[in-house]
Length: 120
Figure 1 (cartoon, one colour):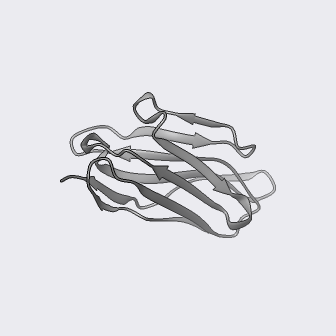
Figure 2 (cartoon, helix red, strand yellow):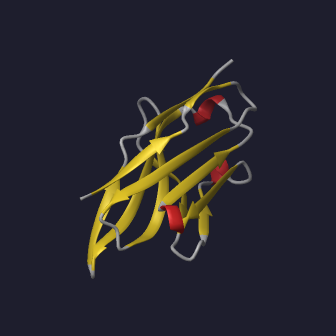
Figure 3 (cartoon, rainbow, N blue to C red):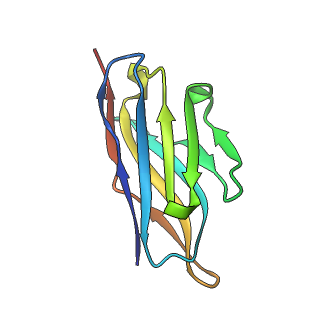
């Protein structure tokens, strides 16, 4: 069994920064793509950023130039550095990863989410 645990959310003023972390734990053989999603009240969940096992990255247009996704494979952890935060970044942020627990056995795993609130 594997799980993802997010941390680093909180309340920050507009223009501020936060760093989210998401650690995978359990029986892990390898981790493929890792992603951050967010869901604001009354809105659908949206993809914020993704990083492949080879460290290729992609970002939603709304966060390009402000957010940076990275990963530490030795720690089975993905990060999201969020700078120049705006009120519209307020949402619950979820971590997602495709995890191989045994040869050719993959699970699509989600974290429980961490709240990010941008407000003065």
